[in-house]
Length: 166
Image (cartoon, rainbow, N blue to C red; front, top):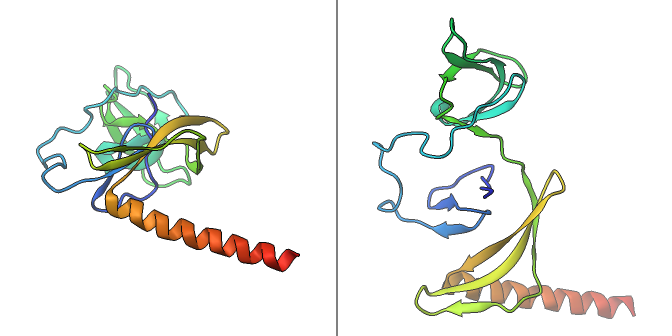
C-alpha cells in the first residue's frame, strides 16, 4: 500500500492511504506519548534519501550505515550540512514520498454514504515519477456544496469562453 504525504500538513488534515484526506479533531490525533515509528521500518542503502520522523521529518541522504562500530544510520541534508543519526532498526526512517502532480476524476458513479455523511468519488492520483494509483475522494456535505458552486462557476466560464470563440 502506498501512502501519500502532502508537502505541507495543515492543522486538521492528515494523509491516509493513497492520499485520501479527512477532517480530524484533536481527539483523533495521536497523543504526544505515541511512539514514533509505528509503521514498517525502512532500511535504506548508502546514498538513499530517507524521511526521518525522529528528526522532525527532515529528509537526508544516508551517508553511513549501521555497523559494529557505529550502531546508527548517519544522514546529511541533500545539499550538504550537519549530519544527524537515526536508530539502526530503521524505526524512524521512511522512504521519501514521490510528489503528487495532479488528481483526475475517474468515469465512475459518485456515491453518497448517508451513515458517514460523505460523498464518495473515485479518482486517479498521478505522481511525479509517472506512476499513478486509484483512490477515493471523500467530501463532507459542506465540501460537496462548495464543490457544486465552484463547478457551476467553471461551467459558466467555459460557456462564456466558447461564446467568444465563435
